[in-house]
Length: 308
Image 1 (cartoon, rainbow, N blue to C red):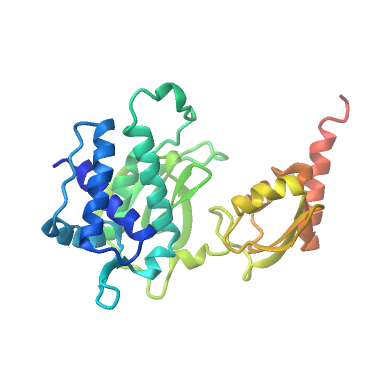
Image 2: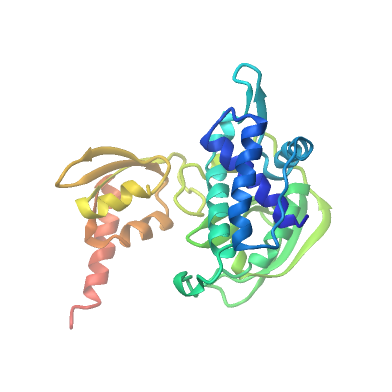
């Protein structure tokens, strides 16, 4: 069986357990077989297969490859996904990626109806190597080009994680030059190399916690995140509710005049640029320092068109 067949079966199992926790082995098998009949119509080379033996192996491999635990409940007499995994954003993204994969790759004669962005992020060919280095704790070397610098710099880092932001991928790593954790855009590195030098992950250091209150990839400069209150017009508010700006977003007020939300974030360049992108559809209410900064930037933008 092809690797694609294995992955498809894994994802079908996860999808079934997400929609119906405590599914029996027979229910899982029936679901996989029904889905296979549909997928086979779209791609007759795809082979999946399902049995008690393969399912037992799948549980182990899903845990190893995806970090997701599938358990059996004697009380409910069925299999389920660990609740901590179900609540994970990464789990949701995996399922989203699976649905997208099937839509784009398993549907025939629909290329004229699927319009993809022509711009694609660069540097993704190094993703597998970076993940291998992170998992096995190898230092990596590369040449790095900042947009505001003319000369490339040589970097050796300890990679801790990768992070996605606005269709770009970044390595979150400790630079051995100054021992600071930084972000490096994958599309701006060259001469990528995995070294033989091992590193130890810092004790009690959680990279996810470091960026928990960050919008984007810029490390916080202040000690504590701030409470930010934004007011959107009702139309823009619908988009903000359907796709929140950040996981800390809370709705304070929602009526015909405005959507008012609160956020708990560090004020960074990434956040300021995001707020600027909404133009007159948003007003910063708190903190006043951020409101003044946004106002000043809008005035500078306005002055560029003063002579028109």
